[in-house]
Image (cartoon, rainbow, N blue to C red):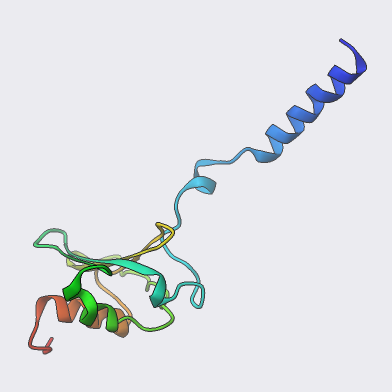
Length: 127
């Protein structure tokens, strides 16, 4: 092999080694730090009772979704840790324009996100 081919082969190995990723590196994030995710980026709100039950979903383009999207805080909060004994509740998933899904619940949600759950299942506004 010529010296040029040796250099090219070594360069390819270095590039491939430097670009390798583990499964964890390529998995889609499920949450973002606060102040990086904003309400304007949310395209879908999905409410799913846990472990089962009727779901509700709103898309920003739906004419009847304006009131639900208005409940989102400007800066989206971090999801809360869930207690180990969490057996039922509701999961609110916000999908952003880049496809990132932020999951809140099933047992504990920030109050601003819990207001969405409340609106979804209790139109009277009383939870």
